[in-house]
Image (cartoon, rainbow, N blue to C red; front, side, top):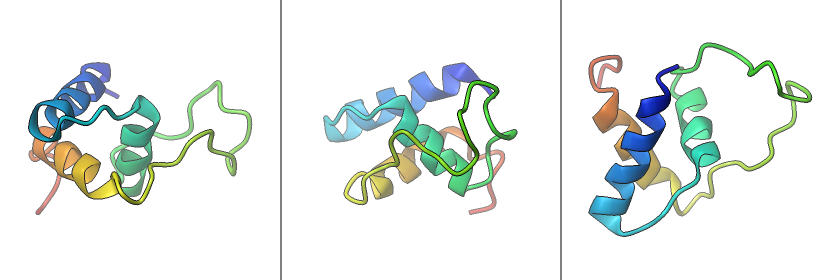
Length: 75
């Protein structure tokens, strides 16, 4: 996973919408879009998540992920 991608996505949301999002929100959206390699080695269990992306932030975080990773997504 490109860790710089998390910074780019967070910066995109901050610049465009003036909102700060957490890395875990970006990770949640990336996982839903199939942009993760798998479960992190430090994750306690496959079923648990510390923080999911809140519904009100999901569209803007998804826009940022699609913007940064447009070469990996079809649409």
